[in-house]
Image (cartoon, rainbow, N blue to C red; front, side, top):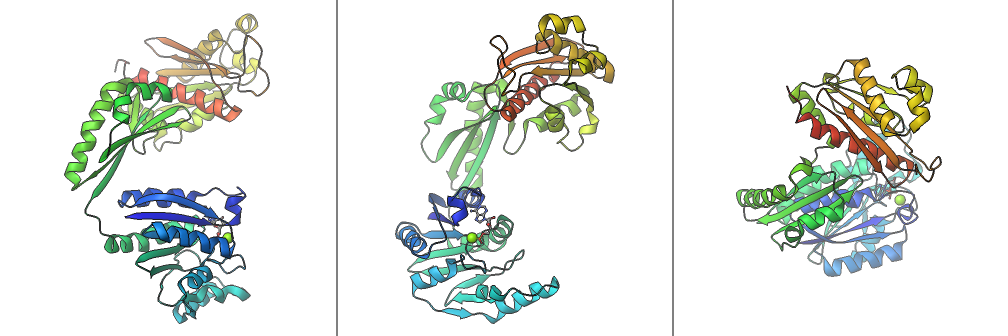
Length: 415
Ligand code: AMP
Ligand code: MG
């Protein structure tokens, strides 16, 4: 079964909004075993939209449009579909009542053009919008299916889940089970992961593996198509085992698990506490650590020691060492970690100091140079890293390395 998605809206073409609808729809369609071969984006223009829908219908079984269903003049999706299919638009009494109720409930006066949304192409099925006003449409045309969904993601999402998925399931019942499983790694570049699992990445359907690089993280996604759930699980487990052998120490989690969640899990399991002294990351690491529910069980405190004076006065960093080595140095990172560990009476202290840029770099200490120290009862570790990227990207990557350092250390601590 082949589908394609047509995203409608001039604002998408101008780049003022990001096309999240097509990403969501593609993910959900993949889960249903429906292949998506094209994403089209077209502005609020009837003839170009007409042309796009025609082309999509000529090569796909299902065409899903998003946007342009509202009451404003630039909302042209319903009229365009009706014209294309040679159908009349008929005022639907139930939809008009729905619209009146919607505004009455909110004690609002219906806008003058509101009734436009109640005109449904003859023979089409309309879908109630549980969040907003514009109904969705399902129309069978020439053996193909056209589905029109509203643009706002908070309207499209629930409508797709509640009405479209059940429709697609009964209409295009697939005899295949599709499953995917994501293995998440950190600490290696995409090229290194690629090299280690090269043979696995060349697998042919029904089981394939894709590589996806993000900032400070590389994911491997196993996809399989099988006759039943058991065979799909078996195929995934077999490949996962091979990947684990190759990437052992670099895997931090699976599917939706974040690195901070993986760290939290280990800290709770091992009953360890931590505290953080941050300079260039400005609290970002603390924020990520406390994004996990239940973080009070391991996170004790943090200090954002941005100035030299605060590093000296609060964390006990030696003033002469700052003079000698600079605030961005191995020695200062270690002293920050030791200082916060002492201050908070925790098992692990972390210190981060670096140059996030874009200004402030020198030949010896360029933008992106970051020292990350971790002090536990067992040992002191320091990493000197030269990150690339924007200020935000450098802060994120520094927090990523610190979390990874934590993840690796917790496992080795005595209980
Ligand atoms: P529309 O019904 O086309 O006027 O869309 C209404 C609003 O929904 C737009 O202004 C956007 O904020 C949002 N929207 C429309 N299409 C998309 C899309 N493809 N992805 C994310 N948001 C969208
Ligand atoms: Mg629009």
